[in-house]
Image (cartoon, rainbow, N blue to C red; front, top):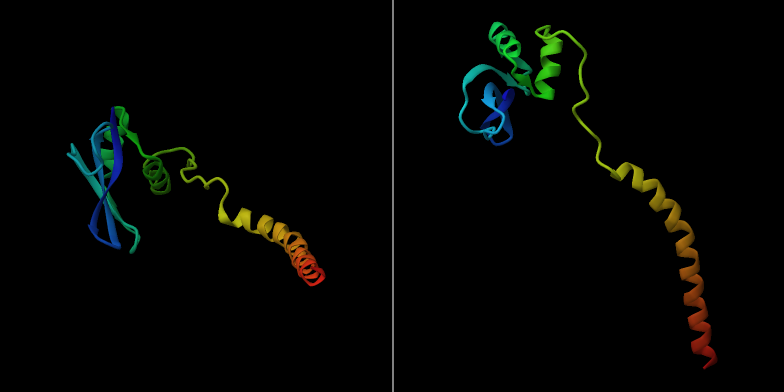
Length: 124
C-alpha cells in the first residue's frame, strides 16, 4: 500500500520535512517513489505539489494523519480533520493534585509516631 508521509531532514534541532510517497513497509528515512513537497515547521513554510498529491490519493495512496490535516487546511482534500495526537495515560498534571491530597494526611501520623518514639525512649 502506498502512503504519503513526512520524512525528517535537516540538522539537529532544525528539523524540516519532505513530503514523500513510499510503500507502507519501507522505513520513513528509506527509499521514496516521489517527492511531493516540503514543510518547515519553524518558518511555517509549505510547498506541496497539489496536483500530484490529488493524483496519488485517487490511485489509493493514504496520507498520514498529520498530512491529512495539513491537506484539509490547504483545501487539497475535502473533509474534516482527524485527531492525531493522544494524551499519555496518567499524565503529570493529573497526578499532582492526588499527590498533594495524599501527602497532607500522611505527614501528620509520621510526626506523631516520632513523638511517641521519643516518649518511649525517655520512659525507658
